[in-house]
Image (tube, one colour):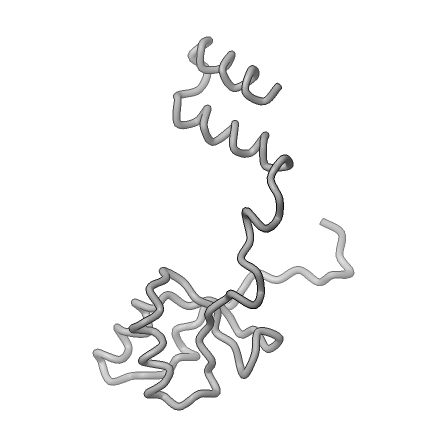
Amino acid sequence: MAERTAEETVNEAVFSTEEKDMIHGVLTLAERSARSIMTPRTDIVWLDLDKPREEQQRCVIEIGHSRLPDVRGSLAEFVGIARPRDHLRRKAKSIWNARSASRSPCMRASTCSS
């Protein structure tokens, strides 16, 4: 169904091929398993703000991801999301403060409806 609807929109020139691919991806999302989309908690790599500065710097340099969670001790103490390049810019300016590079997450209370 999703493929047919997406193909029909391209044939009618309503959407470009890229837009069609995006729509198809959204419409088929329900057919995918959570594992294929999400990283298991045990495989998540994070920056521990409670670790010594040198260890934080080594982690940021070695990590290889565009973003990483900043935590205090464990993922249960989530602080925010940081881009390693923001950390490295601060290091280059001798302003290593990993917490200042974190961006606060957009959080929704579990008691609120979507």
